[in-house]
Length: 110
Image: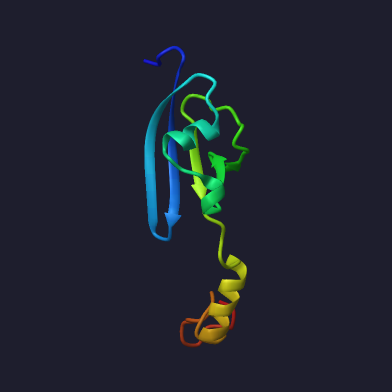
């Protein structure tokens, strides 16, 4: 049963590669993203974190609703498309990709 005037939210943060921390919080009604981060002792500006609610980027002044999931993510170091191109280039066109392994005698592209 939901308590009147209390919000139950989850805060998830990835402060280091391969590490995810999660907090379950009970906050007063009208709490903001900044309040949730303070309760977890997180300072997003210092760590360069971007915050969102359920994958949608929000400001720290955004009011929370019961059941929200606040996510704090580090910025990407490399563009994923660029990293994929570099991996493909280093592996060679014949050894990588969708059609690298074909059945003997099959048409190219199948």
